[in-house]
Length: 461
Ligand code: GLC
Image (cartoon, rainbow, N blue to C red; front, side):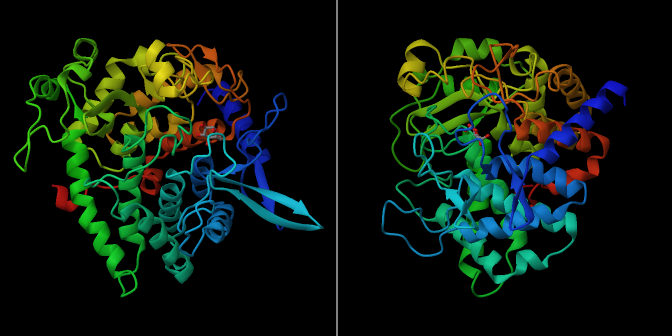
């Protein structure tokens, strides 16, 4: 490793350590950002999704205590009783974030279930990440006893009950409101967004490993196995886009009724930007679409969902390679000057106005709407390494290293090529720092992948 690279890693370590939050004398999580120049808003909190990147790094470095304490304390925040009061968080929900509050000489944790967040959206991803992290903790420490504890078994059950419950649709995907994940503002992700479905699949797989087969868990285990197959099929078949699939959709029949319908979602050809897509999609590439619902197929590329689909083996082997081919062949669009685009392309003009609600933070090619997020570097690295395509990861890390430390670990970058530091980006954003460190750890020793990745499901082969 070059001296420069070593120095950057050292700085990252120092910054990560500074971000650690303590509760009752013990490390419990990491703060979202420690930017000395901008007011914190809620960036002084520990976000569940943000902490996962730090947590993987801590587990790899043998610092499992902070992860254990985090899992234990966040579990206590989860409401355990059925809630008919609409102003209270639902049973099973894991908060988006929490902070340590000092009052009357005592310390307590104040959780945000979306009831304080901008836009007031409850996180659908927090519980899923929580389960994925618990599995990683068990693998890293070899200690199953934490997950086997009855409060942990209950915690998993309650998170899954929220997802497995029958709702107002007939799909295996989980139905969520807009802005319920890393993209926590309106961006047209109401319904069945890929980012959530990929995490859902990984969390179901993790739960099948973590739940003890006993009478109490019997129904939920049945629910998991009943869901995994149809979810996998739906994602692999109906979300998938490549040249061949584009040709099928282009010539879809519509208004088909009944069981034999091929175009089950009644997608109208005119709603798909075929000419742009046919030009953009390389012959060897493909990806999972961003969202699917009645007469809706969102053809934007979402990085988190696609990368997690590779990592969790939600995508089949060929699809995994096609997704990585797409990233390789559309490098300047998806990676550019900073790995990598959260979503591509950006919504512009009328689409931006209608779909985002004219959100200035999400103006075209900024923030969630076509901005580039360095935290995704670890997911890209894990996905590439899992498929033996390490060269992609090396290349991406080298690009990130040119800027990250110098730009003081910015939260995100703007512009079609990711050249500008995000307009409202925080500096010393913890998951940027942890994402970089995690990518370096995975590249240095791919055996760490076992914490994060899943083998293909036997029944899917
Ligand atoms: C922003 C991001 C969200 C993240 C939070 C803290 O709200 O959209 O994904 O968890 O900042 O970093």
